Length: 88
Image 1: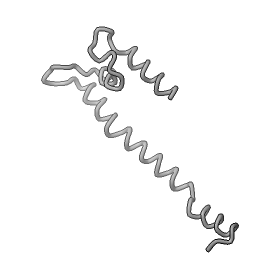
Image 2: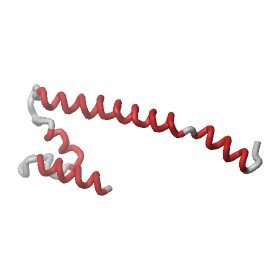
Image 3: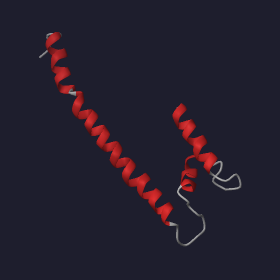
Image 4: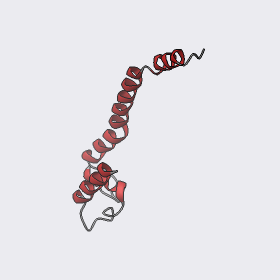
């Protein structure tokens, strides 16, 4: 909660006060990448930001989640609990 609010404030600080995105919360992150509304072609920085947000962030998150799940050893803990509590 606190980190998300801090991130929102950082994004809002990077968004111009006259921008229509200033009070739009999560949508203002496009402004950080240089997104320009109402233009036919976006700058390379906006396209790179989109690639990062929708490709690299999910990929990194999935790798982290997979590593955490691999090292949790849930089935082993369940078997130990069952053995300790005389369950089959």
